[in-house]
Length: 343
Image (cartoon, rainbow, N blue to C red; front, side, top):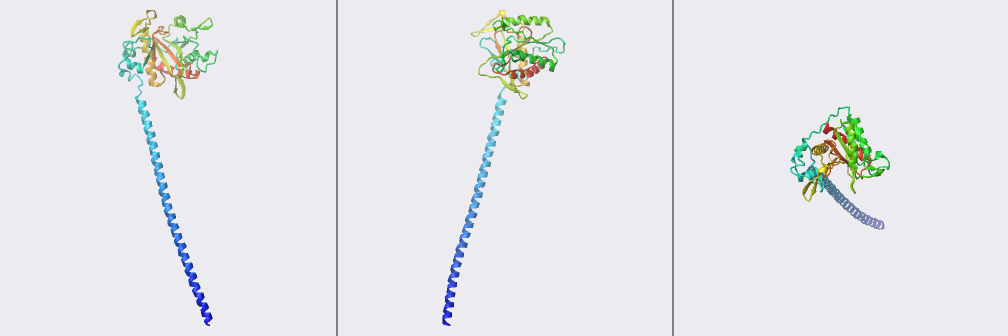
């Protein structure tokens, strides 16, 4: 009996110790789990705050970028608004010859031009109107330099030269504006089958006067050229098409001899004021309808072909660096401007 009681006491003591160990382990594991949960919770809070800060940083960065974009657009707008484009409405704000050279004219160093020669009010009052409803020819298009070609012109194809561009202008004026046009395709810069630009204006005058005698109804004479340059391309976009820019060329029969005017009596032009007025009004109309289409009007000391009619124009269409397509595309706005000025 005593042995049994002793055995039970041993068992009881063992259970107490076992339970104590289990209890201690349970408390330890429970405490460890609580610590892990707390650490996990703290880590989650940290991640949440970090992501929040990152999202805020991203939002701030986004706002900064948008601000820069808005400022950039604003600066471009301000810069574009600072560019002065001469039109009929603002041309009188140009007060002197220096400003005219800045915005309207490029005057060759060999030409003597005074403020009196470019009296804007006088030139704006030149009557450029023409009776376009007549069945008789009203416009003559010709080419003193018929061999002028473009960057992608095919050799031997007249259609790819300035003559082809003139043909395009004649077609537009006839088809779209119902104007009777004479297109002279004479090669005044070809002598004995060879290119000879020297003397071409004299040759042109002989041929041009014969045409004008045949068609005395012609009121407007257009000598169509293309410029010759290096490293430049005169192109803009009009109605979604790459379009060659144009330039109105004026001749003034006075040489600049060290700041002193020297007349050229053998090259007098009785229509100088009318020519200057016509080209100025074309230039201003172009700026109103097709900004960036026209380069500044050029003045050089010669009369060129501009003495044939009061309403005579010498027009440079693009340059040798332009394509044929660009040059022909330019005939649409040119025809529109011409019609607006003379109608």
